[in-house]
Amino acid sequence: MKLKNIFKYTAALALSVTMLGACTGDFEELNTNPMEIDPETLPFDAQFSTPLVYSYPINQNLFQYWTSLSIDNYGGYFEVPHSNWTMARYSLNRGFCGGMHENFMQNIFNNTRRLIRQCDESEMYDFSAIMRIVEVYNLLQYTDTYGPVPYSSVLEADEMTERPSSYAYDKQEDIYKAMFAQLEKAIGDLDTTTDGLDSFDLWCNGDRSLWKKVANQLKLRMALRIVKVDPTNAQKYAQEAITAGVLTDKDILIDKSYSNELRRMMDWWDSGIGSSIVTIMNGFKDPRRPLYFTTNVRDLVKETAVADKNGEYKAEDILIAKGSQYIGVPVGCELGNKNGGNDNQHVYYSFLAGSYATPLPIMFAAEGWFLRAEAKLRWDIGSESVQDLYETGIRTSIKNQYAYRKATATATWSEKGLTAPNMDEIISDATIDAYINGETTQENYVDPWKADYNFEALNKLCVKWDEGASNEDKLARIIMQKWIANFPLSSEAWADYRRTGYPKLFRPKMNMDNSNIDTELGPRRLIYSETELNANTAEVNKGIELLKAESSEVKGSGDTGGTRLWWDVKDKDNF
Image (cartoon, rainbow, N blue to C red):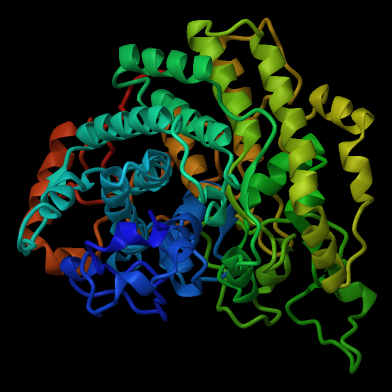
């Protein structure tokens, strides 16, 4: 059978959709094709490449809506370096909370569910298995952003002669059950072989055994996510995933010259490196710092300072010389406008060490080691010690981040007129051993201009493993190192923070919604988007009732940033 013949039953749009900065209209348009396309002429690889690529969106405006202006901040990696954007101070904007919904429905689910059905019908089970894994990868982020979302109703509508005008929401608990089932099906179906997988496989390059590891790592992620709400199944799924095998050495990256839009967010001055990650990595003397971010990219000067015709400042006006310090943007402060003047120099703090050509990150092997370390700590799964798993995770992260980021990081340092540290020293055994045995802790945050923006360090544990420590402190170390290793995957960072409370993150100096969002806890979810409320009103309101029914803490109307998700259990200790 010709590969393209599996599409003869549909003319659904599968090619990448350009957002051009505007949110889409009603929900149904996310799931139907407004154009007539001859399926025989659709390039086969394009059918599959869209959901693979849009797992880390390559559209600039969608990237902002997706995580950049919200989840990137709440996960502790980034911070908006100006006052133009109030979501950093917890005033959630419905118009900008819909990016995760829009990306999943339009670029992921719109393609994966169709391809799964068609490949199953054509007995191309390994192809449909891959789409199941990609679907779950993105569905996990989607439901962990909002809670209840439309899922089963959309699948049911595919079997109808006419599509309905609205789509019902599922409880998050039911969505998790569906995701575990999809992964189980996918893992089994990867034992089949269909020619042509490597023609479109941007994640694993046709390696089915690697896809199984991705699926099992997802399964282990999800198992630990539900440990407080369903501990029996959490242990069961964790045991299955670890026995079958997760990633150990190879990261999943898309390295096909797609535009990495995280860099654009930095160039637009709409994203800056956050003070939490910088002070933690500074305190640890983390060798990955120059791979993640640069030092300050300009002299930081007194507000009254005036540069000469060559752009140079007088020595007495310079507070922090260019390139002399790793420094992050303070959290939730009134920083000033986005103009690049001396009244707001936060845009000149540490810059992302990466370019538009930096590969798109999907999943890191180091995460697999830290997931196993937590599972060992909780349930004694596996033969390796918690300490060995923890330390192997650190070694794997440092070596892999070096391989993945060195070239574009070095280029960024040069582009900004900065002298990069010796990158090759990062992966020396001596450097890694020194880091693993480090006994220093997070440093305080000191802002060059306003003492009101200063923060005292919150994390008091060092990197060095302490076998005599409590399970709580052991977990804190594991999650801290997983958090550093997973940079810049903010959805996982935010989920781990909500689940465990680690690492402890600086909280905003200004909370613009303290009636709904606890300043110390931070946002527990994003609110449903304006377009979804307008297009699918009745079902969204029913979804809010589902959210309230399975939440252990409801704030305000329920559809607020302070309402907890199903697995985010209030007053439930980690052990």
